Image 1 (cartoon, protein in one colour):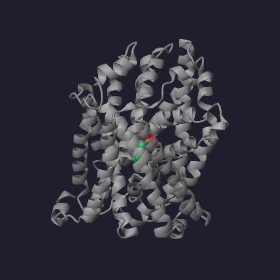
Image 2 (cartoon, rainbow, N blue to C red):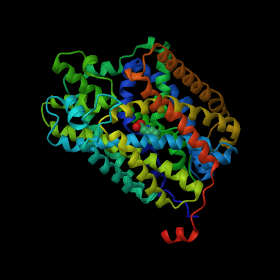
Image 3 (tube, protein in one colour):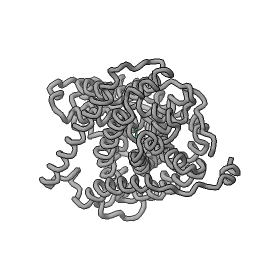
Image 4 (cartoon, helix red, strand yellow):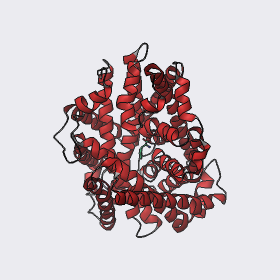
Length: 504
Ligand code: PHE
């Protein structure tokens, strides 16, 4: 067996965890979730979701990673026999996610280059879809590769490999930069944004509270969904990261610090995004709602670039700041996903970690090529939605139940309290055993019902054909579960000990 790697300090661990949590979800998802789900009033369900599910599950993931000193599959199998598959499922989800997250990183790399000349010109949307992606007519037409995307993708995977090649050691060096740097960039963008004319209109759109929305279950589902994705929960990533903590190490406070920093970054991102969009609205004489788009890919690659075009000075500079922010926010989320997969495999099969890293990255790169085709954006969109709305929520629900009831939340408290600065009282059991699973179950049922209604009405997500939804959504889910069960049942031959020693 190789000796288990360790983070070099508590700060580095917390940085790595924040790096994983703070990603594109903060920059381009949160602001829009807030704006369209009650504005300032959204902060109420969001905060409740953070307290009732986000922080408890983060504590849980840190605790079991630390206790069992292993990635998710091994940890789950030690908690209860027969549950190893529940550790593999999130690992496979992570793998799927990084195959398209890396493609988004590829676009961001391309845009660092385009920023220098604001190459998108007067038609950013057309530039992105037709000049960069060369987008095809639909998911049925893959249409070969887009050259700029392939180039960006190779750079993205090299960056991921380079960062995690030495595990915690090299990751530690990188997160020292990729966590503070996006914050600095964000600071610049917020200051630039709020000093623009029209910023107030944009911020009103973002935060004007509509309390009536609190009665809409959709808003609550959105809040819980956002918390999970944003905190990288139920992906096996936080379990893996915590497994590299030394024996004596705080758990609870680290989880609270990670969670609050992450949510702070989200909140601040909204200021950068919507102040600038408010300015654009005023410049164009149009309502904010009309120019804002709906977040995600559109925000980053055409709405924001268009707003940048209208800035009075320093366009290329602010474009660069924006894309450096996206890159440094996203890249540590991307490599954390790979780390989760690598930890899962190397811990279960006692594989050499370096070789496993190369293997996972090699396969990851090949799979990611699907999204680098001209039809890739459609598949990215479909897979992303179904992975997050169904797979992740189910894993989180089962995880809360398994640990809360199977492992026993009291035992979890007794484990973390002596080593942690913040002590958990018996109230924590109610959170973990009842409230978190209940909320997750409601969300899952809600999502499934919505999906069935859509299928019956023939109004598939984004108007995609049923076959594409079945393949990119449901088939992926079924295949992931099957592979999880198979992996849990296998016991591959261990690599020869000498081979491991030679590598050391
Ligand atoms: N939390 C990241 C984000 O907000 C995404 C992510 C999810 C990263 C799961 C790792 C694991 O963008």
